Image (cartoon, rainbow, N blue to C red; front, side, top):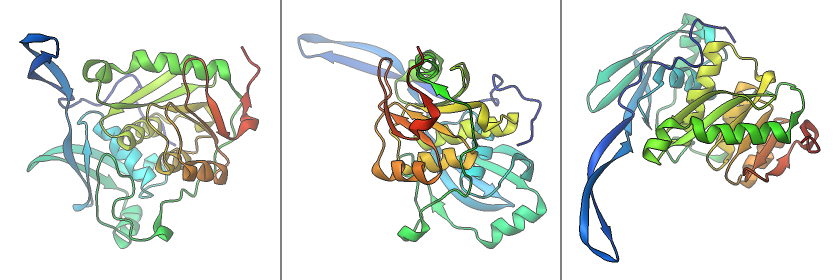
Length: 283
């Protein structure tokens, strides 16, 4: 991965990620309704375009879209490294936004030769797949990392709650975070789609040139196999999810040599794969 000049703390210039809307609150035990307003997370279609050819339409929160372009391109198998992307820019489109990604010539030719058309949805990570043999499988094996302690995971989980600024405002988005091996939270990305949040985070790590061996991923959503595959595309060795995993997620974590922890709370977590990479006795 190649570093760039943007700090992980300097997000891409965002679009409108939340919007206040009028509300009418009715209590069951109070006949008087209360008018007010509250923020909602913005969701809109973003068309990813490579070499002037549309590739996918994803429903996403319109912030950190350049990060999203990098992360999506990696986890879709369109690029293998950040330097295969020459630029990414956001344009206004009819009914949404266009995210135009400029690839290096050789990579663009390969992409166009095997392009597939998909229509993405926030709850679906395999739209456009026609048979089981076509399910995504990352080629990257988990990069060897140091031992992750329970204390580090607990520290990252506690910090992730405070770092979810958009979710604090809207209570309607997922987050994906990157923590150092000591549990210090380095980066967080949010989106209405759990896949999108992870793609944005992976893109941020790619652009910064972060070594996957130096930390671990934490996600606020359930852990389906697509989330494991995205983590494996990055080369991450440890993935921690707040909600439960699926059986296929566990199978894929074992296949890629990853540690998978889930049902992670402030006081407990469950280890589903890769026990050897965890220090369960650390306090």
